[in-house]
Length: 65
Image (cartoon, rainbow, N blue to C red; front, side):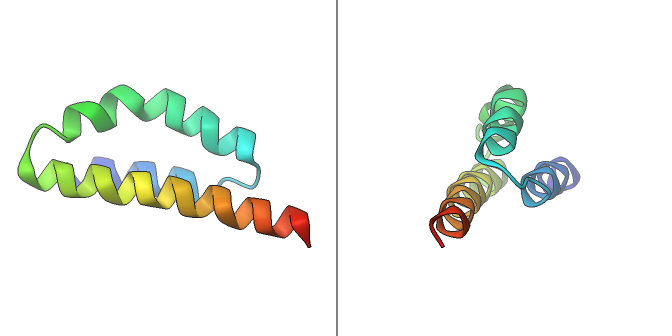
């Protein structure tokens, strides 16, 4: 599971636009929801959600500069 979580995080880190972030989130949603069903997976799912929000915020801030 950790390998899969890292793969998703790497995909999010590679995004350069908000649309790319949303596309990754849409594509990986079921995987993350399934992951969240276990205690360790829930931690990873929260980290993925936080990384998504952080990435979107960074992209927005770059656009606003």
